[in-house]
Image (cartoon, rainbow, N blue to C red; front, top):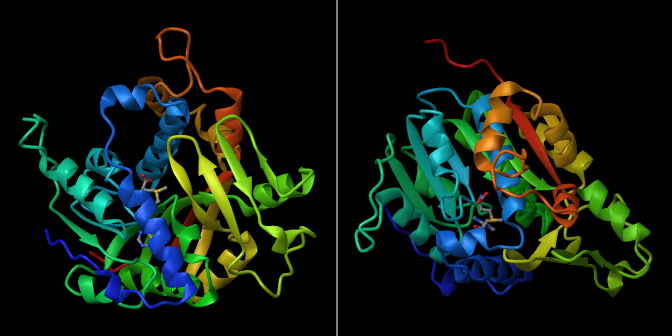
Length: 327
Ligand code: SAM
């Protein structure tokens, strides 16, 4: 695996680069938690629910032997999920150096901690780079095309302006094979805007999160002529504290189509849970993860405030146009 580090000099002085740096610095600074710290988190059940949703998506769409591109892979929290799906190859990319380091440790095992764990069964490359930049393909010439591209809780960081949003989708489209699958999760813009309009001021939230828009959005109107760069601040206890951007879903869908990516499904997390929790294989997975208590084990359960946060997100699946190559 290679470790490509972008020095500050790679970032222009324009606003979107400064924003990308802010996001990267925020995630870089969040180092790996110990198991005890993780279990003590006020949003531990939400984290488990998020992991369950990502696992279901992976189990539904990944096939044994697949080449996987994990955009904004973070600390590699999904490596084990991909291993269970018996994929053949993995490339993980993230803009935050600290996260890629943690991801590398997770993949290789930590010699200092004498971590003993089964090695992952697939080879992997981990790269530190901006996924929404035109230079992404420089790193991936020999790896593409991929069967699956995954972008978990991260595509909205590309929506700071139209050029970056387009570049994100252009990169994904160019790196997927015809018939390849693009899966992901991101904030549900409809829910966020609805909650903003219901709020008295420009902020809303509960004991574990808050969302705050600035004065530019006093009238709470979002003209369809300006669907990029709609910034808000998001704070999620023990997880996120940085600028994010609204991704109006119809714009995402239309833009993706321009890049030959067709929408297969989208579901708000509440709907997702209602739909898949009843399926035996996924009920069992939820029981093992312990996000929703079943009364039999001492996992506790998601609080109402955590469940409200889940409502802020959606999952999506798109397919790259064209016929898959015949075997
Ligand atoms: N996908 C991981 C997961 O599900 O655990 C991490 C999700 S975390 C909420 C968002 C990630 O997006 C962070 O690791 C952050 O560094 C990454 N990110 C944000 N902007 C990025 C960009 N322009 N290029 C690559 N990664 C980016």
